Length: 424
Image 1 (cartoon, one colour):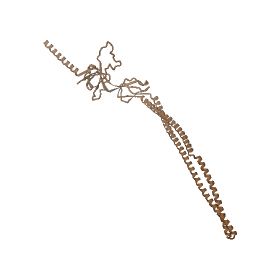
Image 2 (cartoon, helix red, strand yellow):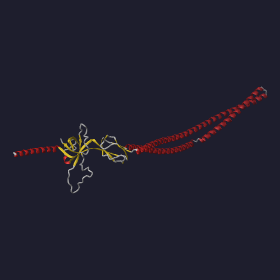
Image 3 (cartoon, rainbow, N blue to C red):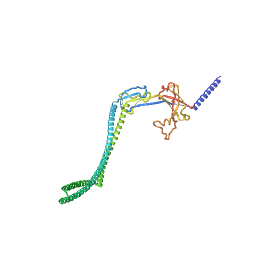
Image 4 (cartoon, rainbow, N blue to C red):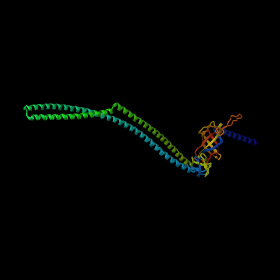
């Protein structure tokens, strides 16, 4: 009886061992497991960007906060004063910039005005030359007209003298005939009247001829005077010289004005740069005022608060951490010998030590680019002679699946876990 019991016990143990071994073999073939795993998540440190004294502390440890919520306020009076200074500097620089632009415009208008004046002077010189030529032509025409008039008056004088000679001869014959009593006294009187009329005509013609001669001489003198002042070659030379002088003066003035315009343009560019610099200072001052309010970058719980009211903080100094419990995952450190069949997208099962009876489903998200020791602060150096081979571990990121109530908020970063990855 005893032997039968022992045989049955041995058979049961053998069956259990075989079954257990079969299960272990199946699991080793289609799953890999590690207990070197931890809950991980997003930790957003909140640090000061400007120095200042803490005047308000609006959160406590482990308090739920929203993204954008004010957590800490610093004393902003100094920064607000600098902000007002920056605004005043922007206003001053803007006015200087506008004034510089107006000065450049005025300089350009002055250059255009001087060019216009130089052109007007040249036009006036041409007009003077044309006017002088017209006056000379008029004087010459007057001389020709006076010469024609003089010739006409001389012809009249010659005719009057001829008529006077004929009247004188007629008077002498009339007197001879009257002495011989061949004609009456009236015939002699008529001859005398004709002689006196002819003499008067001669006198009048002589006076007109003399006046015409004087007019001609006056016209010729005026023409000679204008001809002496209007030598075409000399006048052209003088006009060219005058134009050259005007052009030189205009060129010098234009260069001076252009140089002044360049100086004003440089002043305008400098004013523009100063204006932009003042705007940048204003933006920086505005940001510094905003930086006196430290806001939460994400939704989560406040952790590691290391700041108190009245404390003076410096830029870059960490004040607290916001842990995003809605964005957590599992970092499982598998042995390098276990990763042969592990791929992204495989199913995973997670047990957290805090809740050993509650499994969480997950998916392999990614495998690290290197082992944990490779990315440590002091990587291992195996170049010594007494090197001992150690199996390395590679971090694998496992993302937990959504649950009906959302992501598992009950988990906290740093909790220990056991992760099993299923190949099928």
